Amino acid sequence: DTAVSQTPKYLVTQMGNDKSIKCEQNLGHDTMYWYKQDSKKFLKIMFSYNNKELIINETVPNRFSPKSPDKAHLNLHINSLELGDSAVYFCASGGRETPSGYTFGSGTRLTVV
Amino acid sequence: AQSVTQLGSHVSVSEGALVLLRCNYSSSVPPYLFWYVQYPNQGLQLLLKYTSAATLVKGINGFEAEFKKSETSFHLTKPSAHMSDAAEYFCAVSVGNTGKLIFGQGTTLQVKP
Image (cartoon, rainbow over all chains, first blue to last red; front, side, top):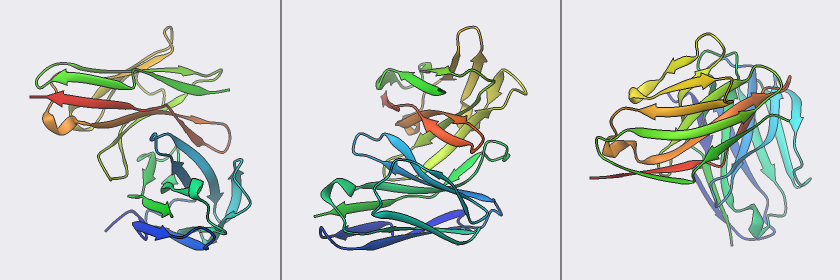
């Protein structure tokens, strides 16, 4: 069983489109995160939810909107996609007190053309 | 503000040689520190984490790291490199009440036959 699963793995879309990335964790963690990895492999947090409540909202364009229907799911919706949104997006769950630390999904490679 | 700095964006070693990847942290409180590995086109996998229980932390795949408060360092080592260790390595610190993970810039480890 995959602990943190993201879909889709690859996403190619045109500028101006709206797209969503889904994330699910079966680890029972209360906290989930979205990270963005740019072309230079730098990882930066975007959002975090704790038990469906938004607790971290970094400086991210309003076009990005996370949604957490329950504590096992954290989806990321992106409106009006731009070329600069091309990156790998990682979902994660857990935390520093969790024995396994932060568990990451395998990533979604978004390419905007 | 808490942060981590990885010294050396690229490290090259011969197979069987010692691996040393450097990480220095900045923190005004006892830090929670992590090392993650990312293989090509994959997610991040936890190698080990420091949570103040012991200064020498042993992780998976033969890696270990030593927390040195006096040097504000958390360097990652492995006595003998394998070809399969070639990957990107990230040092990270968990900060604040939200527990968000702040990553270093990453170090690419190349292992030569």
